[in-house]
Image (cartoon, rainbow, N blue to C red):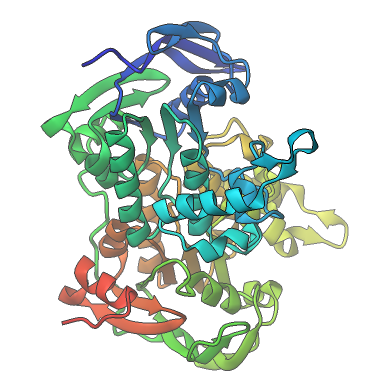
Length: 504
């Protein structure tokens, strides 16, 4: 290795009751991609936040180009060329894309007047967006109107607009489609060629194999091994991450009801505000229906309309063969149609509240009496789902925001499973979840299908789609482009349909 761009030596960080890092070390060369992998709680995010100046270490040393550094703030780290792209996006929703790209470093003109140089910012924004595959027309759009995938690409574009030396990417593809992910790989290759060093965190081990020159594995806040070259395999990474083999990552029990009775049927449904042709599909008892499509294809909007978040502009819904009217989530919940949303932190949980509060909230109708909440029944509900889903929490009183991403996702599942759903809609069900928690969630999905629940799974993870779905429908520009079953379920066939082509 050449002289390291970044050296981390013996970092230690303790929070109340938790030793997050216990002597972690790593090195990163110029133009190298070092992937840092590990289960949720392994210390990856804490390590990155220390490198980026968000936390201060209790012990240890950081060197940048052989010089000791101690960043007291993220601004100091950014000034030195160390940029962190957060997993949870850090954008001003009420501002445009161009305003976010230059927030805090706006181009000015006019001498002492410091007037904004809109022309210069617009030109540079066009270049930055082009590098991540976004059209120049998106520069004037407010962030709140972008898809999660587009927001992620804006974060990446913003980092590219700085004099970056070390770029830290925390789950950068969690909201991206396969096409956008491939575009990101091209951006990473270009950065490597320019000498930028990249720390890359991801739970998607297939993409780690694609981008990483070396892999640093963390487990329980300590170094658990390092891999390079041909050593970087799925099994080697998993073995070091969790200390065991996960031989059946996907249940592979495709014995569900592809030909079973339809529990939910959509007939010529139109989602308000979209001009696409009507959508018709059905979700059957005991199957996992996978839904694929590029960002903007309309998958999430369709699911939200069925759940009552968005209004329908036409068509009908049937539940067990009977027409059902859903204009609000409460009606969907009462009918047994439940949605695990794509963004659990914004739409699935109340993070400052406790684990117990979040589990109880949608079940209060079953926990209440004329004299108030039945505390014994509520405590039993908390115990049942914390134990059944193996949620790692000190107690039901723990604030939900303090849990890892995988455990937060389990709470979203638990609050709905307590209601015994007929139809469970999963929008990106394992986004930002570590490999061990993914295996547990896949086993849970398989168990639910085995019990006759109709599972509708929207996912941009191709491995997940092919590994879990019995039947796949693909959306393109708001319409169903095709359906794949059996041996038709291939990555090539999915991408052909998702991009407007036809399967062979």
